[in-house]
Image (tube, rainbow, N blue to C red):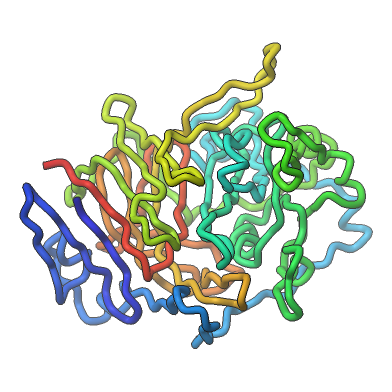
Length: 407
């Protein structure tokens, strides 16, 4: 049973328990501990993540202001023009590495999806190419998903919820369509709003897009968890999604092997909870995927499912959530005010990668909000992922994650 943690102004530490013996590795980074490769001073400094704890009830002051980009306002001429969708290079998906049909195009749509216990199972998560998961508000320990769809555009997706500044800032690097219910209901004066985010293509349940939102009470009758969006129909009638394909974000390779990778049984994610296995990813050796489990409102761990839209009489299938590639991205989380959190998405930080059942370490880097996040291994080479879906856990560096290794 192992625990990895990012501390404020200190390198990441790794705690490992083998056959009942607890070994505490101190004084060196996770990269040094696991790989045996000593870091030079410059490398060690770049591997650190500076964290402002969000455990305090007091608002933490950011030491570095989050850079912002000037919003790109759409002119009437630009709005009327419908650009052609971006063709794929060699028919390979830039978001999953899968080989797609010859007529496939790149048109990323990112949707804000609830992860409260009452909102489960969500619809279409297993059709998402990439899913980001963020700690939500300070009032509870819930999280919120930002799901990116491009390879497959689902008929419907949800429950759709309101945006947060850090979700819009993540969507910004993809230059696709961002779907949410708009700004937080209780956003205080000065809260970063969508209109100031720099996003040039976002919608909410107002105006022309309103008719594509609807209420579905199949899962729950609680009003806030019943908003769904007809994603495919909207994109087919509003096809103005044609961003450039980033060549620096992900590299896909079948049968990825890492010499320094350590075989894992499971990865526990607490987010802002003291429970180190509030979310659990268990590796299935036979299927070569991680199976996700969540704890419900009674703190009982159960396998997570997603409803996948189908054409049969039921209208959906109930599928377990499985993940090909898991990324834990350690980020700086602070208190924006008494309700909302701030997540620093620029700069550099540590990452833990779980690919083909093995754990490796590295870093992430996003100089400004106008840039794409790059993911590197401990030796500075690009991260290689197995073709398939990827989940990215935006993990506060003040919390431990628990890794159970094989052996």
